[in-house]
Amino acid sequence: MVLQAISHPPEALEDLSQQLNIDINCILAIRQTQYLQGRSPVLKSGTLHLAWEYAQSPSDHHRFINMLCVSPEVFQVILSLIEDHPVFSNNSNHPQELVKVQLGVTLYRMGRYGNGASLEDIACVAGCSEGAVELYTQRCFHAMDAVHNAFVCLQTAAEKEWEKCWIDEHLGFKGTWREGWVMYDGTIVPLYAKPAVNGEAYFTCKSNYGLNLQVCNTFL
Image (cartoon, rainbow, N blue to C red; front, side, top):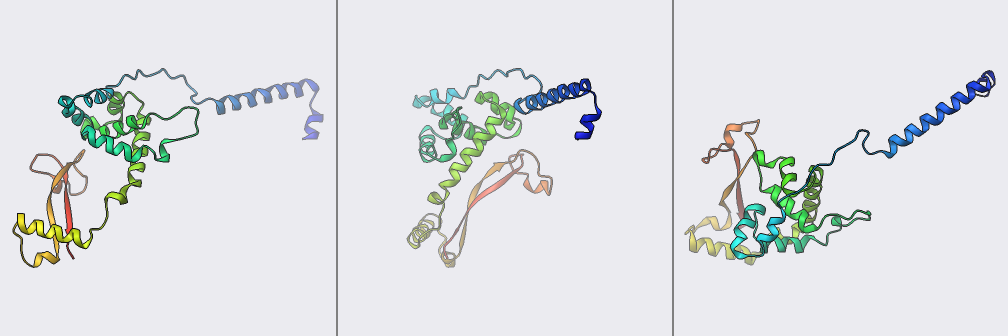
């Protein structure tokens, strides 16, 4: 390197130094720039805030349920269970959106399928970006998973006996089944599209494709 510097005249070294400075400044500009090309802001004026208005009047609760798929009371219970989870806090200078809003966006998204389930459509209703929809969903799912064991657990012997007596009384299934398994008729969860593998097997009586969600109970 010293030999190369000696072999160049001072004018050439000055040119090399200027070019090096230009290259360094370009690299710094690229590293400090989030977008290399300009981006025009996208108008965000969603309608999710209407859900909070619907929650104020019992006569509008059905509209709240149509939007978020739960009643205002159930929404408040879920919110109280997850709002203190650490996933909703950060050390950034830009605080997160309210947990109420993040949960609302998540529930709205969970209640949509088909064309209405696209990130762009959900973001339009929520008044946020497509990336925010995904972040809100991930955070809410993470927080809800943390309380999983408080609501999903094995039955005690007393709870199993109560279930057996209820089925004896209401369904009349008396006999050896008491020490076996019981499958409750379930509900159909619609799928976005026909599954690629054995798709015909998922076609339902409602002329769509879906999975049958059943509750299985063991009395062993």
